[in-house]
Each structure stands twice: as structure tokens, then as C-alpha cells.
Length: 401
Image (tube, rainbow, N blue to C red):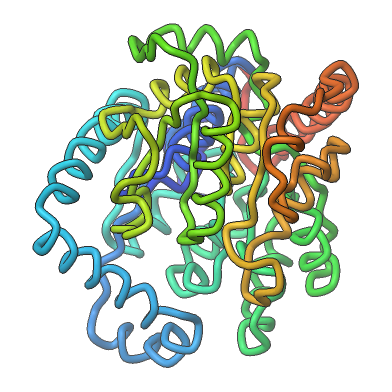
């Protein structure tokens, strides 16, 4: 092998240019746990520049796998910003503060690549490369050959940590290529039970379910990080963190506000312009970065969310909360399995709102002593998995600082 200046580890975490708090915070948690374990590392960031030949080759697969829907969503976002000036202004504020957060915590420890050949060569600079959490193995990611680590030579150790497919099953036309990259990865950690089932059924390798990176940090640690935020609401409130489009969910949260006498703090238009959000809630928030989000959540009386990470932080901060399905329960293309897996793990399926008796459900006490026992065990096992992944050996000598 050629001689290179090697770094101990490299991590690929999903933090594209959008305002999702969960994505930013799982990336933040990943780098904090690596620092805590004493490893030096870099984040690999790849902005792929496709040539015409490659576009033609991957076009059919991209279309079959949902690219057209994504493209339409992006076009609608642009159109909505032109039509709804207040929405555009408010989203620009959120984008600015979230990007500032990413610049502060990610940019200085990132290695950037734009050409695939450079990405392949750059991989030799690291002792081990792993792909992190979030929906990094979604149907469209297959064609970038990035999040699936296909750019990494087999001589370099690889693993995944809490990676997610984002779907309940792999498309039939993607099974062969999915098996190819799963077989190549040395150690596989997935975020949900459904992800383990996919890996175990397709690959020669077996997967282990591990904690989302946000759960690797304790309540005390998250409280300390949130202390950096100046976000304060002086009156008691219900925090609503709803990304989906369901009007019935918002109606039920509004009823909960009436029943409790509390105002509703709402994060409006999180993924796109959502007409249901225009007048939803009493205290709209746009200028919150990810740590502001944590601070506001930690101080809320109740939490209502359809978010995986919203649910995680409700659990970490010992909140009385309700989790709603983002889509109707009978929708076959939903990503509900990650919510089901999380709540089942902590024996909290009773926090899933299906019958819309929100007030009586949310005021019920939660046995957080039992939840914490489960969380500590899950965290310890997951950190041990992370350590094992970081210690995978290759022809180079990695050192634990």
C-alpha cells in the first residue's frame, strides 16, 4: 500500500443543507462521543459533481426510487418561497442559525471532496471509515456510492453506526447492489429493528441494533450543552415539533392546549411550506438553532411530536410526551417502524397517540426509573459497539489517543 499521512478515524454523517434539528444533533452527538472516547477524526463531506454519462446511467434507477418526487418537492419549495414572502423570510432566519451551528461544530473538522476519484484516493488517509446515523441508506443514496462506503478500498476497515434505510423494505431492483455494499462493510450497526431484519435477510453479515448517537450522551451532558443557549420562554408551554402534514394531529394538539390552559410553542414549516402551519400554535419559533431546540424542549411542560428525534429527546429529558405517526397508520410507504422500534425498546408504546384522547394520555405518569435503566444498558452496549468498530484493524496501525 502507498504511504499516506493517516488520521485515526473518519466519519460520514448526514448533514445536508436543510434545517432538520434531529439530523444536526445526531451529527453533533457523534463527534462529541468520538471526542469523549479520545479519538482524533475527520468528517468526510462529499459534494458529488455528476458527469453526463453518469447521469444517463443512473437516471432510470433514480426515477424508479423516488427522485422525481424529491425533485418536485424542491421545485415546490422554491415556488412557495416566491408566493409566500413571510414563509421565505422566516425559513431564511432558521436556515441562517442552523447553518451557523453546523459551521461552528462541523466545518473545521471536515475534509471536502468533489470528485469521486479524489474521494477514493482520500480514503487511504484514514485508519477506519464509518457511516453514521439517520436515513443514510435510503433508496436514492444507493446511486451516490458514498453513504454505502463503496468508494472505500477493502484494505481499509469500515463499519456503520446506527445507519437507517428509512424504508420498511428494499426495492426489489436494489437488492443486488444493497447486498454488495452490506457484504463489504466489516461491522454493521443499524438504528432500528427493521433495519437489522433487512441486513440479516440480504447480507452475509449480521447487524446489531444500536442507539441513535443522540442517546449516547446523558441527560447531564445534554443539559450542559443546552446551557450554551439563551433561548427562554417565560411562561409554561406545550412544545409541538411536527414535521408531517396531518391536520388531525395539529387539531388534537390545539385541543390539548385548551385542556391544559397552556400556550403552544410551534416550529412551523420545518421541511416545506405547510398550509396547516400558517396559524398553528401560539408561539412560533424560527430563530432557534439545534441547541436552542434542546433548551426549549427541556423546559417544556409537555411535548407533542411526530419526529423520531423529538421522541428521543422527550425520553432523555424525562418529559410527558405524545408521539404521533407522521402519516396515517395504514400507509404502506411510511417510516413508522423507527418510532415503533424506539417506543417498544423502552416499553413506551402507550405514548403513541392513535385514538386521539390526547389529554388523558399525556398526563399519565412515566416510570422514568425503568426507562433510564433500559437506556443506560442500551447506551453502554452501543458505546462498546462503537469502540469495537473504531478498533478494527487493517494493514495500518491505528492508535487510540
